[in-house]
Image (cartoon, rainbow, N blue to C red; front, side):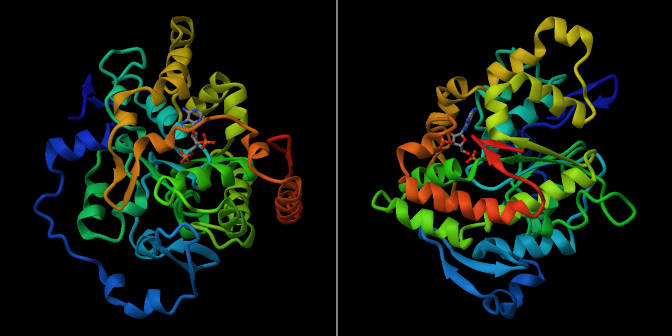
Length: 355
Ligand code: A3P
């Protein structure tokens, strides 16, 4: 399972492998923690149907969470123990999560798994199989035990807003002092990506339904702008703890952002690695064209809770596709909502850039 060099662990390791090799916590009974027994907890929260029909939404601490994930949000606050060397990839759905998961995994794990190796885990596993999804594990005793049993450094993924992780990226003593890599995407393209994704389950889903849900804020993990603002504010206040990436910037110059990512997680590329082309190897390994055509990303479903084919994660991978789906009026409306919400902190999207 865990590779070691000179006694030092070289994680993170692909979560699917760690889980399969050790069984991790096979002796922990599958038992739901107390928040599941607290029927009032979820049922007392305001609810809204999810436009895409996947789950009801519940308004919890100002965010519309999928109903099933509320216990995970509670567990994050009550029990999740961040470690100082944890790294969490956070995102609003359809903003480039899969790509940043792959880039972060390949960057952090490069000593154990050189990106150019024929046996690299990303050649046989979907990026989401390499990294545990926090809300898929928290809220179940066995899931939480699996997270605890993972060797350090742990690399994890979440769609939860920062408001649900108050102790995570804050410095000790109040916080865990771990690092968060956040990826943000131009909202109109995020809406289009979301519509295509959900159409894989509901082919008749009208684009206008998804558009209206995003505009209203009542969409899974929304409002989108509050999600971005939480991480943006934290990244400006504590740039050592929160790295704020933009999907469009990654498209424009992936190598530069992989270097920034490596510095951020405390593993900058050495001169020898630069000379050997390691950065380009990581960029190539994780590129859209490469990942999309791998068998691991062409077959199977995301997970039992979300029976959407994995290939739905790799659709087009470009900026500006909104222009093929939105009327100018829709685009103007969403731009205005976003500009209005972000204006207060001086953020704006200009041709895909968040300035
Ligand atoms: P599109 O639907 O616009 O193509 P997430 O991973 O958060 O669900 O985001 C999915 C979006 O990221 C999809 O956008 C998908 O095509 C794009 N994507 C996935 N892997 C990518 C990669 N390696 N490079 C660029 N974009 C990628």
